[in-house]
Image 1 (cartoon, helix red, strand yellow):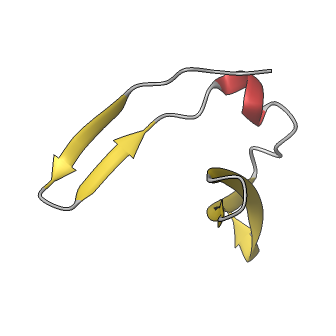
Image 2: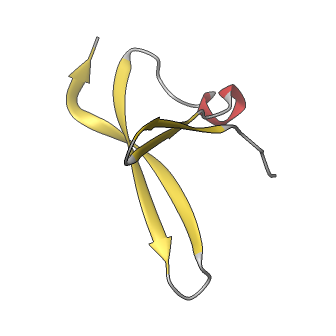
Length: 58
């Protein structure tokens, strides 16, 4: 499955994007998460992982 999302400039060296809601459906909304980005040199592609923050709750 693929999603196309908007990428916009926030500052001189920073950009932002959105994560589609469907990609977040399995998340527990009572917990906090970090987004971990990883670049695979062999494929030339980025992947992201949602990692629960330790002790992270609202």
